[in-house]
Image (cartoon, rainbow, N blue to C red):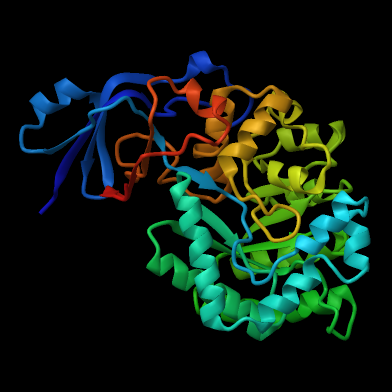
Length: 411
C-alpha cells in the first residue's frame, strides 16, 4: 500500500525545473514555490505546490509540518570523489605550502603512490570504516548522491577490495554511492611493463571481473604527465566502452589534452579543466560532455580555479565536484568549495545549484534525481533560512537541518 506524506510549509522550494542543461543561468530563471509543500508517494515526489492547497486536496496524506523558516532544494550530488582510501598525505600538503609542486612531490615518493601503499595495507574493515565515515560526512552536508572512485589499489586484489568496499558502504549507508573504476590512475611502481601494458592488464584481467560482479559500470583514466598520455588513454577508453562501461576522464588538470579525448570517446564528463584554454572550452561547448570543475583541488594545490565562467558562457554544461581525496583535495566540503569558486568566478546562485544538482546528475548519467519534480526521487534537503541566497552567502557554514532520502526522513 502506497504511503502519502506531505512536508511543509517551506518558505521557498527551488525545484530546478525548466533550467537548461548547458550554458549560463540567471537567478531570475529559478522556479521558486513560496510557502510550498512536497507531496511524497513512497520514495518518489508526487507533487510540489502551495502547502495549504496540497493539504486540502490530499486529506489522507500524513502531514509533517515545518515550524520554522526553511528553503528546500533537491539533494546535492557530488559527481567526483575519492573517499575510499587509507592513510594521510599531510606531509605532501606541508611540502606544497613550502614550495614543492604536485609533480615534484610525486617524483620524490609522495603523491598517489603513497596512498596506494597505505590503501593496500589496510584491512577490509579498516577501509570500510574510514569510507563510511566520510560518506556520512557528505550526507550531513546535504550530499544525497556521491560518486566514489577506486584507483588507490592499482592491483587486481586491491582494486577489487576498493570497489567491494564502496559497494558495501553503499548498501549500509543512507547516501547513494556511484562507483567508478579508476584503476588507470597511474602506472603502479611495482608493475613490470609500459603504461600500455598496464592498461592491457586492466582491460583483460580487472574489468571483466568488475563487470561480472557488478562492482561498477563506469571507467575513469588520468590523462596527465606522470600518468597516461592521450593516445594510451584513447585506446583504453574505446575498449572499455566496447565492454559496456560508461566513461569519464581526469583531464586538463596541469596540461590540456584530456578534454579532447573525452569529446572523441563521448565521455559523460571530463573533470578538472584547470589547464583548459579557449580551444578546449569551445570544443567542449559543442559536445555533450559535462565539464566537471573541482575547486577543492585548486584550493588544496594552491593553483588557479578551472575557468568555470568561460565554460558556462561558451555554452558548456558545468557541474561541481569536491574531489575529496587525501592528497590534492582533503577538505571534502562541496558547498564551501562551490561558494568560494562562485565568488572568484562570478557564478550565480542558480549556476552553482544547477552544478550540484541536475547537471551533476547528468555527469553520472542519472535521470531520476537532481530536480524536485513529479516522479523524481524524493531526495530533499532544507536549509534553516527564508531566502535561498543565504545558502551560498554563508559559504558552507549553513548546513541542512532537514533531509529526506528516497522519501525517508534522515534529519
